Image 1 (cartoon, helix red, strand yellow):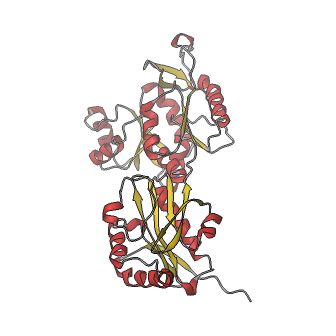
Image 2 (cartoon, helix red, strand yellow):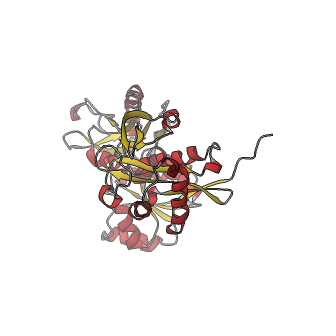
Image 3 (cartoon, one colour):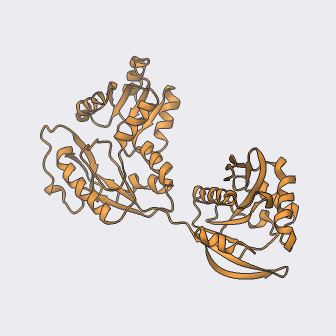
Length: 383
């Protein structure tokens, strides 16, 4: 007869959990002398509370885990003072304790705790996890850890186990020429440990080789490597973007982001491709926002941008102006159309990160920046 699996809840440890945590530490580690000083355990909850987890099974305390971050890799030591060892900016994640009550073991609860700790380590942008264990080295090895050393404390042999956190390689696709630090730097901030491969649709071309824009359907503004501003038709860019995207696939990226607000509906990739227009459209639909005020970067884009959003099912109010709350024409447009749209949309990739927030504060309207919205969506999946 198979026993029913317990209902598991993982949560951040609270100060009121301390008596149960100390008792669990003694029950799991005390029999061979590896329990730690209660004051050290209490300090861990104080200095790095987000790294201290309680596991409940069927509503009852069943286990816990504590951790801290280090600035450099070294051997763990029992009873170290976390006020001295924990570094909030550190990239080494030390699992100081992971314990499941003896009566609750062999039910997958330890694996649930370990999985949550690895998630926390990634969220904290750590590059490596290190721990020591007396009797669970084989268990940690089954979960991806390697033995990197061994030490002895209190007469106890303690294998040291480590795991490198591998972050996915990301592709950054720009419509002009790479590098574009103004576009890619926000992506690096969102995914600080992810290797980035950047390619541009116009890489290898000179300004003289670009075709003149002559009444095309969707002119796009971009820059060359020397900083020169150029206007290029979407139709000309589309096949070159596809070639650049194919290059990213060959570079074995796990996902790519298009750093341009154009729809480029026919772009395809074997890996996930995050596109600002698609990301914003999905978010607006999920929020129930159907009336949008769209801020265009240049007047020549108003007609194609308007057509694109209307085809996606939105009522659109368009305006071309710099995204500056002090701009008189923008102030007048918002005043005249207030109540006609649910939010303001910055249909451009490359605004400063604070731009949307400043406009939102000035006009008391939700403001969505296509570029930063898409970077956040990418980071939510791959960070």
